[in-house]
Image (cartoon, rainbow, N blue to C red; front, side, top):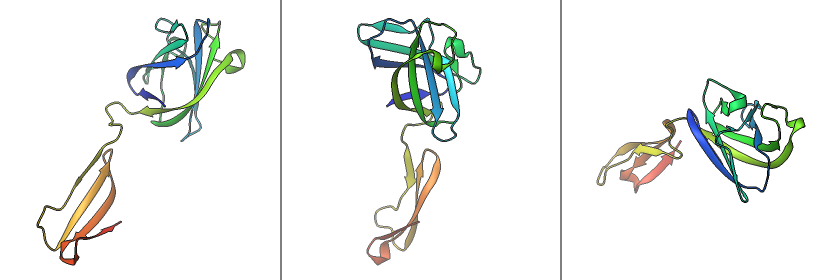
Length: 155
Protein backbone atom coordinates (compact mmCIF):
# COMPACT_ATOMS: atom_id res chain seq x y z
CA UNK A 1 0.00 0.00 0.00
CA UNK A 2 1.39 3.40 -0.97
CA UNK A 3 1.38 6.14 1.63
CA UNK A 4 0.68 9.82 0.97
CA UNK A 5 1.78 12.31 3.62
CA UNK A 6 -0.25 15.48 3.98
CA UNK A 7 1.56 18.80 3.44
CA UNK A 8 4.44 16.93 1.76
CA UNK A 9 5.97 16.01 -1.57
CA UNK A 10 5.14 12.36 -2.22
CA UNK A 11 6.90 9.88 -4.53
CA UNK A 12 5.40 6.55 -5.57
CA UNK A 13 6.95 3.80 -7.70
CA UNK A 14 4.93 1.41 -9.86
CA UNK A 15 6.05 -1.57 -11.92
CA UNK A 16 4.40 -0.40 -15.15
CA UNK A 17 5.64 -0.33 -18.71
CA UNK A 18 4.43 2.81 -20.51
CA UNK A 19 5.64 5.38 -23.00
CA UNK A 20 3.23 8.15 -22.00
CA UNK A 21 4.47 11.35 -20.38
CA UNK A 22 1.38 12.35 -18.39
CA UNK A 23 -0.43 10.48 -15.64
CA UNK A 24 -3.87 11.23 -14.24
CA UNK A 25 -4.65 10.09 -10.71
CA UNK A 26 -8.25 9.72 -9.59
CA UNK A 27 -8.54 9.21 -5.84
CA UNK A 28 -11.71 8.56 -3.85
CA UNK A 29 -11.90 8.77 -0.05
CA UNK A 30 -13.40 5.61 1.44
CA UNK A 31 -14.59 7.71 4.41
CA UNK A 32 -16.44 10.48 2.53
CA UNK A 33 -16.79 9.34 -1.10
CA UNK A 34 -15.03 12.53 -2.26
CA UNK A 35 -13.19 12.02 -5.58
CA UNK A 36 -10.17 14.14 -6.51
CA UNK A 37 -8.60 14.03 -9.99
CA UNK A 38 -5.16 15.49 -10.65
CA UNK A 39 -2.15 15.12 -12.91
CA UNK A 40 1.14 13.92 -11.43
CA UNK A 41 3.86 16.54 -11.37
CA UNK A 42 5.03 16.53 -15.02
CA UNK A 43 8.51 17.73 -14.08
CA UNK A 44 9.17 14.86 -11.69
CA UNK A 45 7.31 11.99 -13.37
CA UNK A 46 9.91 9.55 -14.70
CA UNK A 47 9.51 6.32 -16.66
CA UNK A 48 12.57 4.08 -16.39
CA UNK A 49 12.30 0.63 -17.96
CA UNK A 50 9.32 -1.02 -16.28
CA UNK A 51 9.29 1.46 -13.40
CA UNK A 52 7.08 4.51 -13.24
CA UNK A 53 7.85 7.12 -10.58
CA UNK A 54 5.01 9.52 -9.73
CA UNK A 55 5.55 12.73 -7.80
CA UNK A 56 2.85 14.98 -6.36
CA UNK A 57 2.45 17.43 -3.50
CA UNK A 58 -0.36 17.16 -0.96
CA UNK A 59 -1.26 20.72 0.04
CA UNK A 60 -4.42 22.71 0.78
CA UNK A 61 -3.50 25.15 -2.04
CA UNK A 62 -4.28 23.08 -5.12
CA UNK A 63 -2.92 23.18 -8.68
CA UNK A 64 -4.38 19.93 -10.04
CA UNK A 65 -2.69 20.23 -13.46
CA UNK A 66 0.76 20.49 -11.84
CA UNK A 67 0.61 17.76 -9.20
CA UNK A 68 -0.56 19.80 -6.20
CA UNK A 69 -3.69 18.42 -4.57
CA UNK A 70 -5.58 18.42 -1.27
CA UNK A 71 -6.42 14.92 0.02
CA UNK A 72 -8.71 15.46 2.97
CA UNK A 73 -9.62 13.68 5.17
CA UNK A 74 -6.71 11.48 6.14
CA UNK A 75 -7.47 7.79 5.86
CA UNK A 76 -7.93 5.14 3.19
CA UNK A 77 -8.39 6.18 -0.45
CA UNK A 78 -9.01 4.22 -3.67
CA UNK A 79 -6.51 5.15 -6.40
CA UNK A 80 -7.06 4.80 -10.15
CA UNK A 81 -3.93 5.62 -12.16
CA UNK A 82 -4.33 6.55 -15.83
CA UNK A 83 -1.88 7.32 -18.63
CA UNK A 84 -2.62 10.01 -21.20
CA UNK A 85 -1.08 12.22 -23.86
CA UNK A 86 -2.68 15.40 -22.45
CA UNK A 87 -0.98 17.67 -19.92
CA UNK A 88 -4.30 19.18 -18.83
CA UNK A 89 -7.05 16.51 -19.01
CA UNK A 90 -8.65 15.84 -15.62
CA UNK A 91 -11.40 13.52 -16.96
CA UNK A 92 -10.70 9.78 -16.48
CA UNK A 93 -13.05 9.00 -19.40
CA UNK A 94 -10.40 10.53 -21.71
CA UNK A 95 -7.47 8.49 -20.36
CA UNK A 96 -6.31 4.84 -20.25
CA UNK A 97 -6.48 2.99 -16.93
CA UNK A 98 -3.16 1.49 -15.77
CA UNK A 99 -3.93 0.29 -12.26
CA UNK A 100 -6.35 0.30 -9.35
CA UNK A 101 -5.13 0.12 -5.75
CA UNK A 102 -5.80 1.33 -2.22
CA UNK A 103 -3.56 3.97 -0.62
CA UNK A 104 -3.41 5.64 2.78
CA UNK A 105 -3.23 9.38 3.46
CA UNK A 106 -1.62 10.36 6.78
CA UNK A 107 -1.73 13.74 8.48
CA UNK A 108 1.58 15.63 8.53
CA UNK A 109 3.56 14.67 11.58
CA UNK A 110 1.22 11.84 12.56
CA UNK A 111 2.84 8.63 13.58
CA UNK A 112 1.93 5.66 11.41
CA UNK A 113 1.22 3.63 14.53
CA UNK A 114 1.63 5.12 17.97
CA UNK A 115 0.61 3.51 21.23
CA UNK A 116 1.18 5.30 24.51
CA UNK A 117 -0.22 4.87 27.94
CA UNK A 118 0.28 4.63 31.65
CA UNK A 119 0.54 1.36 33.44
CA UNK A 120 0.78 -0.04 36.92
CA UNK A 121 4.20 -0.12 38.50
CA UNK A 122 5.57 -3.42 39.73
CA UNK A 123 4.46 -4.06 43.28
CA UNK A 124 1.42 -1.74 43.19
CA UNK A 125 -1.49 -2.94 45.23
CA UNK A 126 -5.15 -2.06 45.21
CA UNK A 127 -6.72 -0.68 42.04
CA UNK A 128 -4.61 1.12 39.43
CA UNK A 129 -6.08 2.92 36.40
CA UNK A 130 -4.34 2.09 33.12
CA UNK A 131 -5.00 4.03 29.90
CA UNK A 132 -4.11 3.12 26.33
CA UNK A 133 -3.91 5.79 23.63
CA UNK A 134 -3.66 5.38 19.86
CA UNK A 135 -2.43 8.35 17.79
CA UNK A 136 -3.31 10.77 20.58
CA UNK A 137 -6.81 9.50 21.41
CA UNK A 138 -7.69 7.33 24.37
CA UNK A 139 -9.09 4.06 23.06
CA UNK A 140 -9.09 1.90 26.19
CA UNK A 141 -9.03 2.29 29.89
CA UNK A 142 -8.35 -0.68 32.10
CA UNK A 143 -8.45 -1.34 35.78
CA UNK A 144 -5.71 -3.55 37.12
CA UNK A 145 -6.70 -4.94 40.47
CA UNK A 146 -3.45 -6.31 41.90
CA UNK A 147 -5.20 -7.39 45.09
CA UNK A 148 -7.30 -9.84 43.00
CA UNK A 149 -4.51 -11.77 41.24
CA UNK A 150 -3.75 -9.03 38.68
CA UNK A 151 -7.21 -9.16 37.01
CA UNK A 152 -7.57 -6.59 34.22
CA UNK A 153 -10.99 -5.21 33.29
CA UNK A 154 -10.99 -3.36 29.96
CA UNK A 155 -13.62 -0.85 28.86
